[in-house]
Length: 172
Image (cartoon, rainbow, N blue to C red; front, side):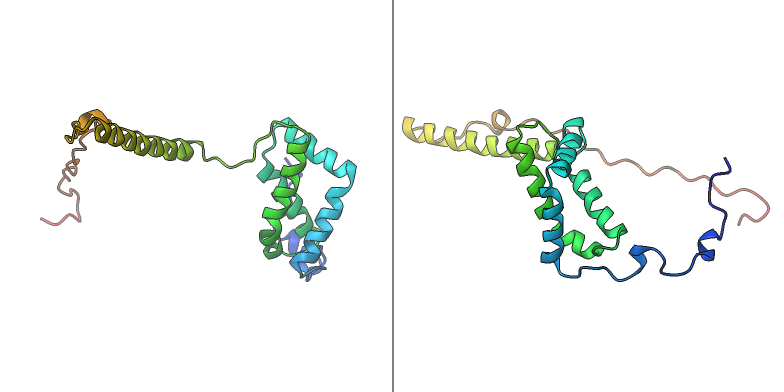
């Protein structure tokens, strides 16, 4: 209960005493990327990264953690992290694939992917039906009800009726 910092405690420390409060050591994205690739090329570091992926940590979280740690240590800025994040993500991803790991990339797009796939399948089905009708020589279109799912009618909601104000200050 009493382990929390005292209000104003941060104002008692000398300014710019933390690494992330000073200018970063590296301001070039290529050099920062080289530092991260060198660190991740260490077999022990890559083994740790793959271990966390194997435990179920999403790859995006792992990448963000690595880059956030570098920012906290004053190696590079947040801007550099945003620039090199996709490359670090892909670097770790390729190693995980090579290690034949089943891992979560951290992108939650399953519902979007299903919706896109449904639309693509619908268009393919329509094109196949059109080609079949052309081959059979029939020109008439099947009813739209057969090709599309029925849509629910959306009824507009009526706005709630407001009660007249009551009280001493209410207008009459």
